[in-house]
Length: 87
Image (cartoon, rainbow, N blue to C red; front, side, top):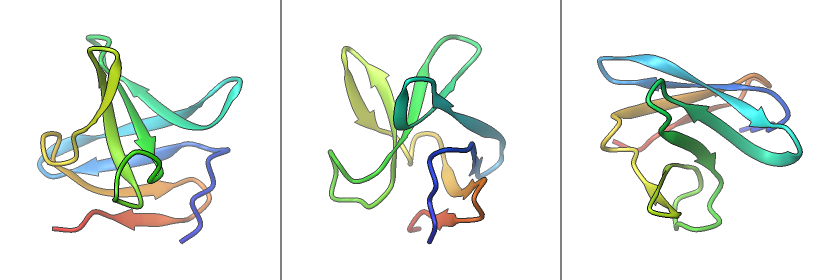
């Protein structure tokens, strides 16, 4: 699994449209998606969870895991890597 963070990634969700995550300028290693209402989501790599890859939402000044709430299915990285969330 080649998860290159220099490009974008697409998060596919069950029954929902996909979200595009883009790198944050000046902060290598962070891919972020901001919704129309301003909610910030990021793809995280195991640093604050026992999971290898997880989706975090920024609320109350901290990152919270939210794969189940947003119905995450899989992530396609622009480098060609794919990560499927456990069911």
